[in-house]
Amino acid sequence: MNSRERFQQALGIARTLAADPTLNEDNVEARVAELGGISTEDLKGKRRTIDRVYLRDIACYFLNEGFGVSTTDIGVRMDGRDHSTIVHSVSKIRDELGTYRDLRDSLTKPQEQSYS
Image (cartoon, rainbow, N blue to C red; front, side):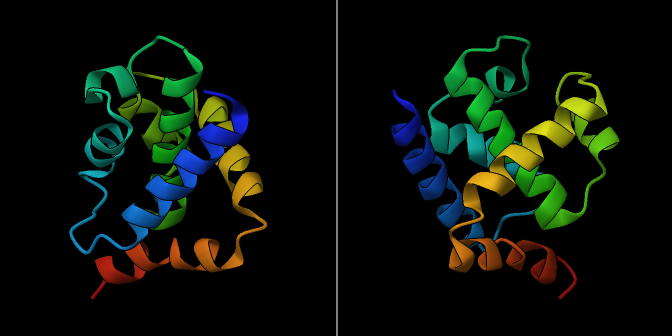
């Protein structure tokens, strides 16, 4: 899968997650793994294949931007990763989604729903 295909996959996953009324901070990892066709263990694991890393980045982005989970807490959830790794993951997805304002705006929806 090339970088354009990975980005298209990320967009599809992000749109699906943003529209999912059952999404919460406890099931983000499972939903991203399911939509990406890997296990939750693989998503959180140490292997750094590009497809897993990209899905992991999406999960980190949603946890941080969508639900306000701290980068330190996300690192713990992602098999003990350092918070700076999580900051990089979130920044990478934020930059890639930056040109898609409608999608970016919809990604705040999970956080708003969680307080309803």
